[in-house]
Image (cartoon, rainbow, N blue to C red; front, side, top):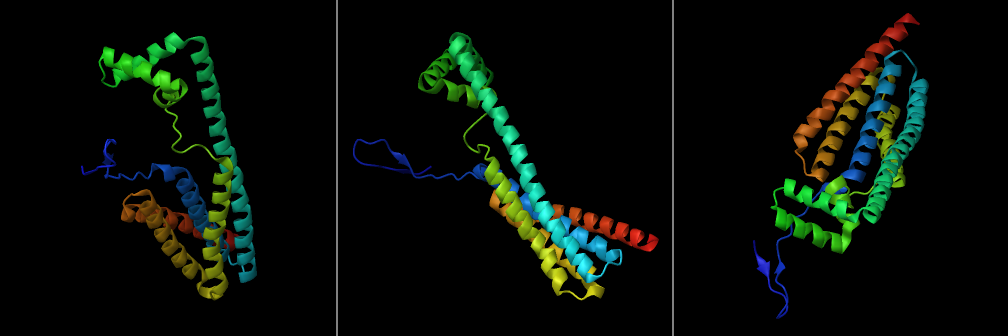
Length: 242
């Protein structure tokens, strides 16, 4: 590891920068989930109505309704879900704060046991526990006892807005393709555009998160084909019965 010397008498500064991508997990999950759901659910809805014999107006109307309803549903679901997570974490913080105030000795011993279980010997574990308690007792317990960090704190409003916006953006893909396609090949053009968009989204999300792109693209393509095939079959069966 290379090191860079600072001013005379200063502590050497490491020139090694090690980027981590876990901080993206909150917004990335909401964005990928929203866009993926928007593309696939709207495309499946369009394909199902088209397979059932609906005219172009009915097909596009169903797609627009799916976009609006889906975006609102995603926003509400993400907001409630992430708010619940925030409530749980807030309750844990309050509980730990109370315990530190009432039983500081027991909490110190608990922190020492955690470090012993992680491989430190008793004297060093005691020293580390005492030092961390002196610097930030609550932070040490939240991080090492409960597993809470400030790396990706819950942000309900951010998750809701990202999910709604990305759902709408994803849903616009099959809608625009359906609007531009002749009615007799609409199912195939929407299906092809949807699979292309899903593959691109899967690869982009994997790239942003530092994961293998090909595997992510294949994974989302498999589920996309299954979803559209299922709605297409159901649409044809319902259309025949009517």
